[in-house]
Amino acid sequence: MLSLAEQRVLLACIAQIDSTAVLTEDYRFEITASGVADLAGLESLSNTYRDLKKASEKLYERSVIIDDPDPDNPKITQRKTRWISSIDYVPGEGKLVLSFAVGIIPYLSQLSREFTKYKLKHVAKFESVYSIRLYELLVQWSSAGEREIEVEWFKQQFQVGDKYSRVVDLKKRVIDPAIAEINEHSNFWVKYGQRKSGKTITHFQFQFGLKDEPKKYKHLSDEEINRQAKPGETKAAVVARLTGTSLSEFAKPGESFEQAIDRKRSLAEVKRKLR
Image (cartoon, rainbow, N blue to C red):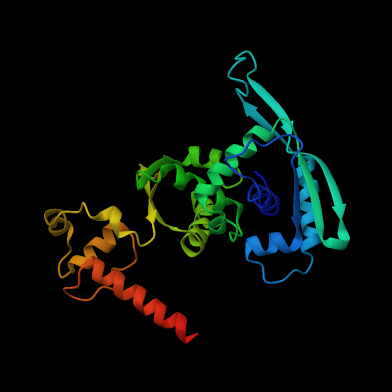
């Protein structure tokens, strides 16, 4: 798995791609220390050029294996290619100019389209490589709202191997930090549970959705709300709990879901003006 710094270099390049245009092997990407810092929301530029140079050089040394790279030639089962073919250094301007390897260029356009969906601003501020990977999965699963996955499948996707043999360590080092960053910086909310087979945790259960998006939940009928309600729980609190919009404690007695959201937004606007 690429390091966080390497992923930020890729994000800075991907942000420059016109997803509607054809990307050629002659395309050169100019990335600056200030640009990467701005993309990642870093307040200090101290050592940013040094870190940018180091991350780019690591990326230059890396290779990636692509399965079934040529649909027109099914005999080719895998292709191994570098990410970057050359780096030009412009230290006086805190700038690097990167050229990507021919074998990876077709996939950069695809990554550009995908990261447009991800909204770069949501992932650029992550400080854990696992946060970006989990966010990618949430985007892929977004139409479902929930997903149960095997622990071993999760470990493969996050390329941790046997690094965290105990599930408690996997949760502490990988899942919990990723979920905290996604909930803080992105347009998704996410929470998770687990399922056991006997005494062994075998599955993780994720629930997720876009933050404060009431239009997705208008299909909830009064019958469903009444059925799901806990003793003493308001209608707005029930809807908030089912949709994960974090309004359960915010809603007032008798207040509708839409009224709770409007009041929350009004308060946020007032707070913004008072800063």
